Figure 1 (cartoon, helix red, strand yellow):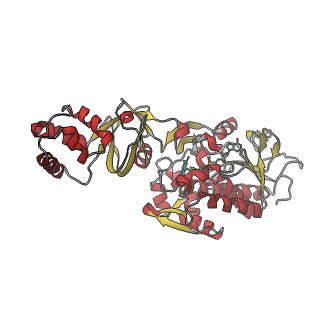
Figure 2 (tube, protein in one colour):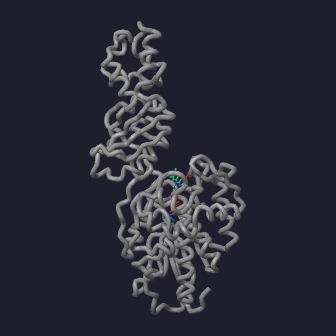
Figure 3 (cartoon, protein in one colour):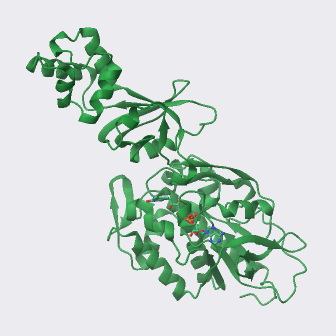
Length: 436
Ligand SMILES: Cc1cc2nc3c(=O)[nH]c(=O)nc-3n(C[C@H](O)[C@H](O)[C@H](O)COP(=O)(O)OP(=O)(O)OC[C@H]3O[C@@H](n4cnc5c(N)ncnc54)[C@H](O)[C@@H]3O)c2cc1C
C-alpha cells in the first residue's frame, strides 16, 4: 500500500478538522466513520438538506444494498472491480445491513437480493443518517465547494467554498457523478480533483435510456411491455446482454428497467453500433408460436390481419408490426402466405431496434468514468497525488449494475475514506501536533 508523503511545515493555525465535501451516501458515510473514530468533522453540502439523491433511489424506496457476498458485489461492477475489493470486503452488504438496522431502520430483502427499508421509504435512510450525523456532532454546513487549497508541498489543507473558507487536516471529496444534476451532483468534484493532479476518465452515462434510430419507438411511446426478453448485440454480432423483464417505448427510443440494465453493458458507444432484439413472446418457442398464429388465423380466416393481431399484441404495436412485416394490414388472414407468416413470426421473436446512442448523462442513473482509480489507494481511498485528500463514491471511475450495488459502492468507499482520513490525522498527530 502506498501512502503519500506526510505534510511538512504546517503551522499551528492549521485545522485538525476533516472536511467532507458532499452530503450524499458516500460523504455521509465518510463523515460518520471519521466522527466514530474521534475526529472533528465538517460536512459541506451545497443543498439545504443532505441526501437529496437518496430520496429518489429505488423509485423512492431506496435499494440500499444487495444481500450477497463481496465477491458477488464485484461481479456486478463492470468497471474496476478489483479496486473495490478491499473496501467492499471490509464493509460488505452484511455490515451495511447491520449498520442501518443499528440506526433503527428495519430492512427487508426482495427479488434479486435487493435490500430496501421495510417501510419502503427512502426518507427513512436519509433521516437515519442525518440523525446519526447530529448525534456524532458532525457540523453540517450549507455551502458549495469551489476548489481545494494546498500548501507548498502540494498537500490539501482545506476547501474554498462560495461562502467561506474551510481549513482542514484532511479532505474527503464525495461530490458524486454528473447524473441527475437537479439533486446537486453536477460533477464539481472532477475539476477539484483534476486541479490537484488527478486524471479524470471522461464521464459517461450508464444505466441510461437509449435513443433509437427511426420513428417506430416514437409511434409506440407510452407502451410498456412486461415479460419480454431482449438481446443486445453489437456490430460484431456479439451478444453483450440478454435478459427478461420490462421495457418502455418512449418518444426518443427505449427505457424501463430492462433497458437501463442493458445500457450498463453497452460500454463502447463511441466505437460500436448496438441493436436490441426484442422477443415479444419469450414463453413460446418458434414452433409453438407458429402453431398459435395458425390457430388464431384459423379461428377467423376472413378477418383482416391487423384485427387478428390484436389477440397477440398490444394495440399500439400493430401498425408498426404490420408495416415492418410488409403484409398489407387489411389482408384477410387466410390469404397470408407461409413466407409472410414466417416473416411475422421472426418479427415477433426478434423485433429489432437500432440504437443511436444513450440519452444524456443528466438522465443516467449513474456516471461511469471519473477519478482514475490507480491514483487512489484502494484501502484508504487516499489520493496518491495530493496528501490529505481522500475520494469516495460515484466521483471515482467505478460503477455497477442495478440491484443496490451503486449505493453499496458509496457506503464501502465512504467508510474507507472516512477511516483513511481519520487515520491520516492520527498518524500525523494532527496538524497542530495534538491529535484529536
Ligand atoms: C433516479 C436514481 C435512482 C437510483 N436508485 C438507486 C438504487 O435504488 N440503488 C443503488 O444502489 N443506487 C441507486 N442510484 C445510484 C446512487 O444513488 C448513486 O450511485 C449514489 O447516490 C452515489 O453516491 P455519492 O455519495 O457518491 O454521490 P451523490 O449521492 O450524488 O452525492 C453527492 C453529494 O455532493 C453534493 N455536492 C456536489 N457538488 C458539491 C459541491 N461543489 N459542494 C458541496 N456539495 C456538493 C451533492 O449535492 C450531493 O448531495 C440511483 C440513482 C438515481 C439518479
